[in-house]
Amino acid sequence: MAHTIRGKSKLLTRVRRIKGQSEALERALEQEIDCVAILQQIAAIRGAVNGLMAEVLEGHIRGHLGATEATPEQRQEDVEQVVAAVRSYLK
Image (cartoon, rainbow, N blue to C red; front, side, top):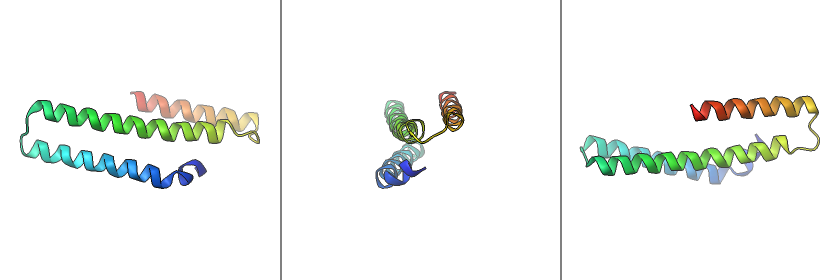
């Protein structure tokens, strides 16, 4: 997980932004704001989560699958972990 530690500040900023968007969505629902505004907020949250996923996934792939010191067995295990995470995310 060294790649998430290196980018910790940037990742936390993204997570906090998503949290703020989620809280804004909650307030909008409580206040019965127009449906179009709700849909736009949901789309913004989805885009932010997709961006976070892409950043962490790229770091994982570069840090683990691109590691020259990894054994073929370790690399295969890392591939399986990435595939499982992507499948879970896409459900």
